Image 1: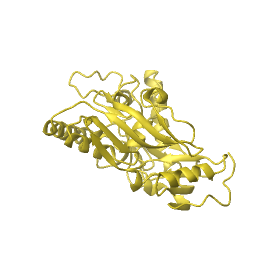
Image 2: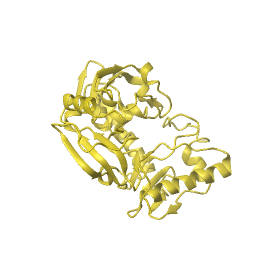
Image 3: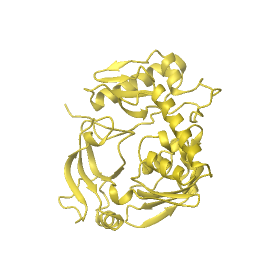
Image 4: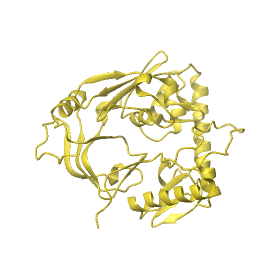
Length: 312
């Protein structure tokens, strides 16, 4: 990776140097990025990426709901989309949302129009992250309803990607290196608006009963070893859920510094108030080691970890 140039391209949006990222993540940890760029609009983003020297690393960041930024920060330009990228429109059964639109807002607006994207309601984060991670729950995935995603390439060009281009897998997809996803178009089944809202309320109630929604977490810490989301059904098989193998390893409630595996849901890594990124990632690695020792299963991180450790 090359060092960042002393002068970056002119922008109409906001470009901040040595911007601490901890207040932009749900876990509230992490060091500074060399730069944080918040583009004014698509054209501003295109021009910036086009004029940015090729060797400079770009990291697109959503609302930080599924992210640990290490304590030493990130040697890159972090790109965070804001108000110019959060519009939601519905036409028939087609819903188009900006990458910065919150998943919950998209689910609600779709339901108002009688379109069933209810699985998005309880997923923390924004649409860009939902596409990137093929987010899902209750047996439904982003891949099931996505029709196209629009990106700005690292060279500054606009491009539409199909589901085939994205090569969706469980909690994974493929985006071109350095590309920034700016919007996505979905097609959902029809439903009665009242029924859809009632379903989402029931899902929220169940989530709040079983997950530490009032704590600082980043959602599920590890992918389910079975490779599929919970269906939410009473007969759902729990043998290979991440929380089950963590429980079996005796790691529910385990702590390291200010980090803890939630006593309420053992696949949620929480900041009790004083955690560093090193505490959180270190505890996660302890859990992975213990689970492997007790069950032979290697848990895969669902939370993205980026940046450098703090130098001593």
